[in-house]
Length: 231
Image 1 (cartoon, rainbow, N blue to C red):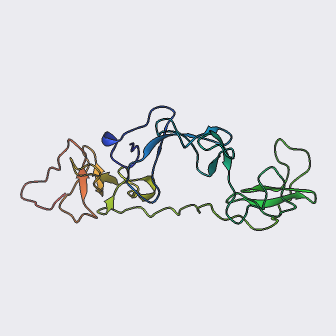
Image 2 (cartoon, rainbow, N blue to C red):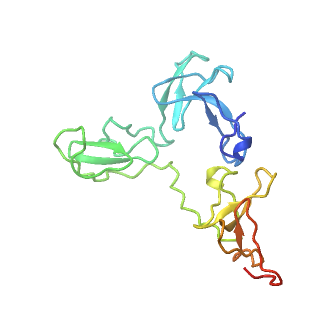
C-alpha cells in the first residue's frame, strides 16, 4: 500500500523507484497500490502476482495474443465504445471522418489528407512537408476525455482550508496573504485560513476570525496593559 499525496507529509508512504502509486477511482483519501505502469508499445502482464505484474498507463489496454491466457501482451490504445470503426492517429481520417480515441477530432490538412488530433493550428506544422493545414473539422470530437476542472474559489480569512492533506482535486487553498494554520497533533485535519505576521508587525487575536491577525510561530501578540481588544 502507498499514499504519497492524500495525507500529511510525515505520514506518507512512497513507492520504490520505477513504481507508481495507483489510487482507486472516486475514493478520495484512500491508499493506493505500488505498481509498475508502462506506456504505449511496452510489454504488459496483469496475470502475474501483484509484485511482478506490469500494467498499462491510463487510456491504454494490455492486448494479449489470442488463445494464450497468462502470456505477456503489448500496451495499446483502445477505441471509445461505438467508435471502433473510426481512425487512429497517423492512419488518416478523411475516409472515416471520425477518431477512435477520446478527445480527438479529424482535422483536414487538404482535400487528400486529414488526421486525428486533439487540437490543430492552421498553417505549416514543424517536421512535415511545405503544405499547410487548413485544420477544418471533419466530423465531431470523440467524447471521453474529462473537461478541465474549473479553478475553485480561494478560502477567505477564518474559513476552513486543507492544502496538503487531501488528494489534489479536493484541496482548499487560502486567498493571497493568508496561511492555512493546522491544529497540532491532528494529522489529516483541516486548518483555518489566517493572516499571520512576523516580528514587529501589529497583531490582534481578539477580532472576529475574518479580521484577526496572528503572530508567526515563536512569537506572541503583546497587548498594552489595561487595553483588552487593542492591537
